[in-house]
Length: 220
Image (cartoon, rainbow, N blue to C red; front, side):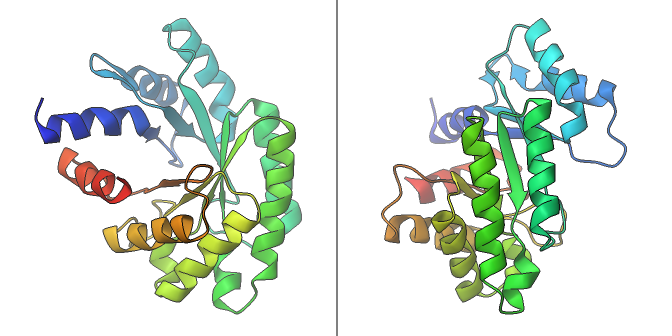
């Protein structure tokens, strides 16, 4: 097996296959579930809007892949700073049956100098997820934070507040995952001594086996 083939296989098994479009339908979500199960194996998860979770759960069960996890998004895509709304959306996602919640960090508040709202938002969403045994991934939107010190600070806040994973991007802004931002976020995980308990996910821009190989090499 070549290095590229091995990377493709590893990436497949770690991937969240995603559809988060305004025109998503039950049929598109069912097709995504089928796509998540390939002859080479299946993805770790699918990521969809909360309202489609029951449809996806049924489709995954019927196709014999109930172990594919279902991720969804909250406070998405703009990362607003209203904690009550983000928490209500997270609780609703849990009620729909999500295995994982990807909450968008209030990155604009951080850019404006407010660190506390991000900490509190992630902390409260984490408490809701933890009570339901649901994984919490925090999207910090590196392409909008731009500056290394802000990317580092957002990563640190998310981890201190209880994130199980930190994730680069929503995929809804002009600049998504880059190797530079990935390296920075992974260095925060290492520096904080949480490499065994906090994961990292790039999102947006990882389109080929070669792309995946570069990120896997960073992580290794």
